Length: 412
Image 1 (cartoon, rainbow, N blue to C red):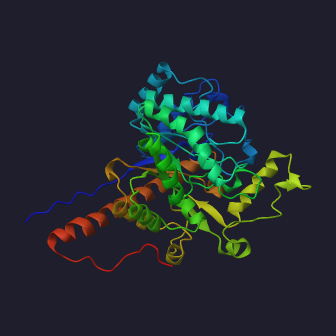
Image 2 (image 1 turned 45 degrees about the vertical axis):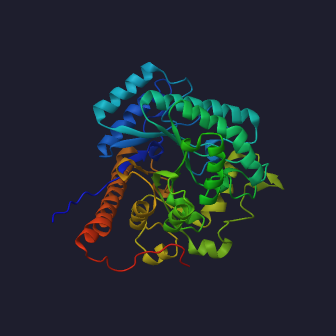
């Protein structure tokens, strides 16, 4: 009897917000697509075969000042002017010459923002992102749903149906999938609200997907899972994936961000899982500060208890893994293979860099660090692929039992 060994590896990509200023603004503002060309080459230099191309409202058009953002966005894809065939040809030529492709496009914004004018501006911009995705030959866009902070969660479900379903219909018309990242965005405003993106966990994903199914766009709504946000909310990846499988929704996750979160046990002791709830500095004299830089303090709802990890920068800590206080990357990749309904070989693993001390805006300094993190992610995925093949295929075919029990879901 002969048996075959065929490990399935995910496709590595990197979000271009990892280095927002790779191309200085004085160069890229008059020549927007230069930023894409230089990022494609940067990715090739790091031996990363794909990029997740970040789009954002230009700083001159955004409703959120850069100084109020915990993780500044990148408009590597500049859409002040709509994308067109000439621009697409230039980008495709750069992809061909570098050998680097697109995993998807990304535009992370609050699509349910309370102000109607801002909401319409974001919707129009998202449609430009959709059109650019089609012209560049990718089939997915990644982003948030968001939340109207003036409304209850149930009212936001109604708003999702009224405002977001039309966007998904536009995605369907273009043959696109919209993949939602689940960050709760606690610091998005100066209220005491913690969940400012209603698509923050499996329960809400299922509720939103049911609305999508009712309107014929269920296939357009998928999740771009990021384990850092699970840690932030006291969840563990394996249990979340198991829950989706138990409920019959393990098809919902269709892509991954590779970004960790390291919990500060002292911060948890001080504030609990909701983060700093008072005396943050975002309110002055009994009202939200007029200084946008002060609004950054609203993120103490998160950073008082947790800090983002660039994969590989946090020390290996088995106890932290067991307490769900940092990401167990190997089990993350194993659980994805064991519990999710995915085509592993055609699933993207997108490295995202938001580790604050290492947000270096210098290619020569950041490049080696980012490449090392990408290599770490590749090695972890290869290890998981080998373990999965051994335990799920090779040993069963040989009639040999698998040893031990491994990590189990729902344990407390």
